[in-house]
Length: 265
Image 1 (tube, helix red, strand yellow):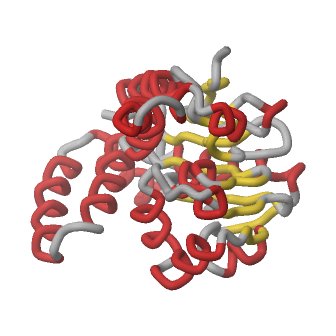
Image 2 (cartoon, rainbow, N blue to C red):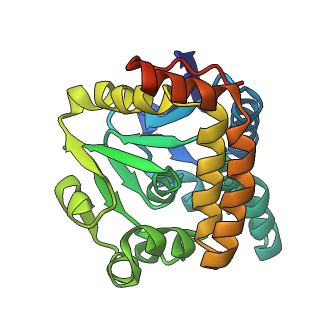
């Protein structure tokens, strides 16, 4: 059964995790392949300027499949080396593919985002939550640890102290707290969530596709590099951008007091 529903319109691709009847669990055989294929296709398609990631039904994603954990099947079964390979070859491929998206990503968190589901949401560049959203990294309550790199992801979003509080207590926070902690940028009513996400995505998608991808790369690289290195990367990238038709279109539109029409050239 397919995991993702994919829609594309107006330079925006929407990826919906679509196992609504079981709160969109992740980690079934083939999930990593499906995410990888979808994200690779997005990276190759210059018509895509922004991605919205959301969940079907009442949850964003409840995380790993608890029933599979109970039966020790699929990714969660076998010997320790086999389980390690299951994470590397399946769950980690979900995360690596999302992290590797070259275009800006908006997570529209419609409901609970728990465990792996929370960490998947945190890989987006921007997060909008419905008032019904909840966030938690409850791995330790199940006697396991964040096997998806969550201890690397979450502190970069909300800081070490708050990430530690969530990891070491297993507490689940509501959307208002998530906004207060900087985990999401805004909270809206559930019936307005996708409209809000699409409005934000439309603003992003109106900008030049090459500049968007390079700006995201510079932000990503800036987390790990020195300021001098960041300046050097910016200078080299900027030299390329100055020679694009989209740059001239932006300059002309500003002078002529009109809305620019960027074509990715």
